[in-house]
Image: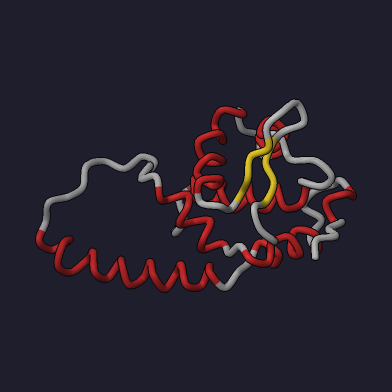
Length: 150
């Protein structure tokens, strides 16, 4: 069972990727998309949602792209998921059911479980994920391991 939407998973991956690759220059959406086998336009709305949430910042110009808006230890996976879900785009979801069972029994349970799940994700920082990616040598490039952020 998948508890996170593909959009939320991609948002976390994008932020971690930016954290690993944004030195010395910002990460272009095109490069980010290539590393994740996606069309570049597929990421734009997601990246903009992350900028709007203050997780990433966009850098304009010929060497522009995206970089972290804050230190990676100050950004949690839960915050990234909330930003990805904030615009209300749900993939492959039909109309909401009109059901007293859903409204009174199931939805309150799902809300409690969602809060607990997001609370667990709040305990995981981008720094934690970057360290794990480095330990597992997720990217072949050597510069991904260097981070001189204080």
